[in-house]
Length: 151
Image (cartoon, rainbow, N blue to C red; front, side):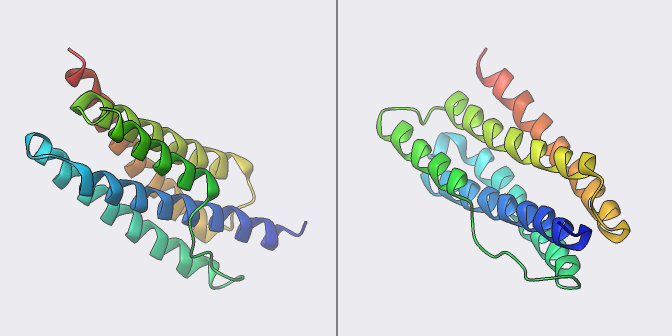
């Protein structure tokens, strides 16, 4: 596979997982009850972060190929699992944060793999690295909140 095709594939994968993240947070935001209203604001910020990430990545991909605009099958399955858990009582704070952290683990891994692959164009490396730092910070914040909720 030509480097440009591989770069477009990697960047489109990151766009897709950012789309998954937006859809996942929007799903959780819709289901959050009043006692966890602080999480709604936090998750709205992270959804906005991923929308911005997707736009930045799409601008780079547009220089090389076709931009991905959908979500992934695994992201759809994760949201379905969140639906099942909420039906059976998994809507307490610790459960919400555990599922959010699982989603953050997935996006963090995707970014780490994209950077380690070595196939990204120079203009994309800076953007992906910055976004990875922001996503890592979000992951760490959610993990800390989850740890506190389990006490």
